[in-house]
Image (cartoon, rainbow, N blue to C red; front, top):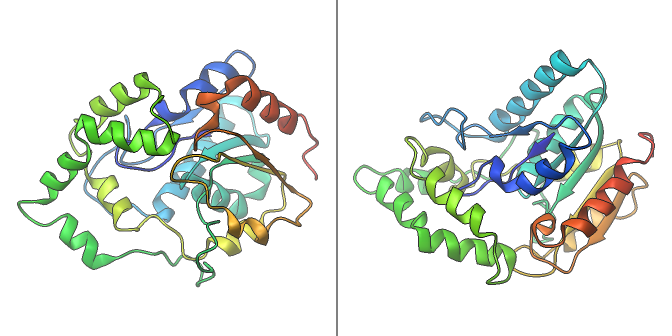
Length: 263
């Protein structure tokens, strides 16, 4: 099960290299999260609960089609929080988790609020969705040049995946494309209790990240450093290493997936 990142232009296209590689070896399900890609993009509250429930629903579909057995799952960036929560809530449903550039580990402040609390900024959301300018803000953030700029910041390089950029441009032009991203920008999808969630995981977890771009601060991973079920790999890349060094990334992931379920 592959889960894309969350941003202004996200979709399952962000896990395309992994989908293409593993579809030759496994049954692969790549989800478009609510508000993105081909999923429903209605005007509603996009929250960790909604996203986590979408993963639970996908697990149910996978079990119906493939039989009930633990699933290997990978998520990137903020979606790691949703996947970790899903695994905490339904531990028997998952075999192993691969977390690519997960959020919640920057070490700025503990995120140990009550269960279900988020970092939501309602006044910011009200401003972003204000009548007459909400759509304009989103259109500005998803201008082709701006999308290209943010991909360069994600890669930490000018050498981005141009096919992903082109798909992102098309995806952000679809009806309702602004609703989930504006919730994202107001921090509605960030969990304030995520440290409790990460620490509660008992299954094998592989965390990987890069060293370039905007997503390189993982000082906070000390909360799980000593846990025997967690392992770590750092790639000399940006935040999505499977685009830049697919052979090395896939080899490392294959080794992890070959490990026994019980760490």
